Image (cartoon, rainbow, N blue to C red; front, side):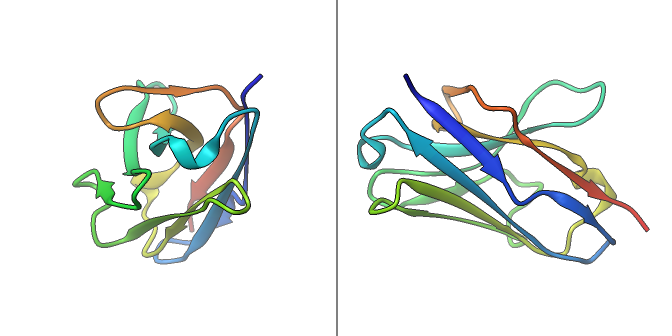
Amino acid sequence: QVQLVESGGGLVQPGGSLRLSCAASGLTFRAYAMSWVRQAPGKSVEWVSGITRDEVTDYADAVKGRFTVSRDNSKSMLYLQMTDLQPDDTAVYYCAQGSRWSFEYKGQGTQVTVSS
């Protein structure tokens, strides 16, 4: 079955950076658009960023210019480079199959906390 395992979260000060990784298995990774989504405490899941099979990228307005999504199809890996992190970015981040219009996430997620 499909497994998506996120890593790389942590505690960072405002203005700091983190790089999230997602290891995918159980699917033909290169055939799928992939996304990052997040869920802040008490809020619904929010789509953050996506990348197509052809590596066309897409970003939510809230993170545009600060986050960069990438993928390595040879390793079935998805990445999210996050810079200039702010307290509003605090959330559990999940790797997901799909795009901003339709996505599915399965993993445990990785916690990102931005605080001074």
